[in-house]
Image (cartoon, rainbow, N blue to C red; front, side, top):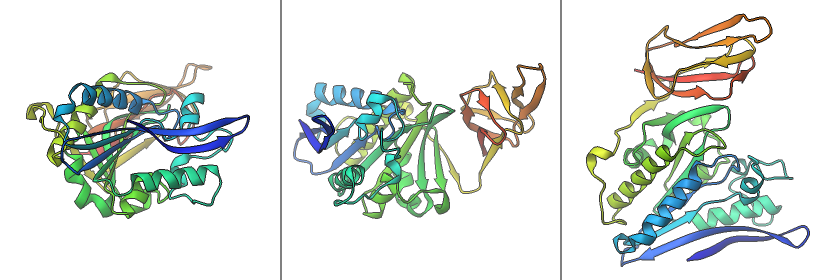
Length: 308
């Protein structure tokens, strides 16, 4: 059943409509919400929502509870391929918990938060931006790690990154929901403005696995198909940044183990033909973030490595 969560007037007789698809079946009272499209240039979640809707529709008898799918919290951003809310110059994921008496964007995020509040689990799906490529991962505030890491392990992802509190923005949807005792996992994967079917299919299987563990879905995926993620806490991650401006060239892929000193790529000057920086791994570990957009400036993030 398609339901409208937010309906707000826009100029020239148009409306901002934020919708969800609600699937409810059986006698179970558990509720899981799948949320994506907060940033208009992050499209991995669109495929996940499509696949989940199809699977539930074709196997409704396996559902015992409620699944709510929100494919586009920022529909204007998705329509215009804009990260934030167009014309407002706002990052939607930096204005939660919102304000019922505030401007349009503040009212919208407040209404979304109230609609999600009280769910037994929320999965907030993001892509990376256009500059970085991320392996499928869950990012968790260290203060909620004890509660959320066991759930994250079920999601068929490669990596769980437990952040220090200082690195977690309080104005995000996930922080606001977790503060309201609504458990929320933030998934990040892929690269901006693209859809990776492999990553999406893995996450769909992981969500079904989590639903099974919660008693919402009767069928369990084969255990050998569910990945066991690496868990990284606090200072177990090294950042590699550009020391020069130029073009970053690499044939390396992420989700591999690298050795300290191993070459990852080079920053070059197309004008002079010089290699301006040989980029090497700073530690032995899992390369889980890698630069996707080749033009870099001094200080640009090139890679992140989890220490092993």
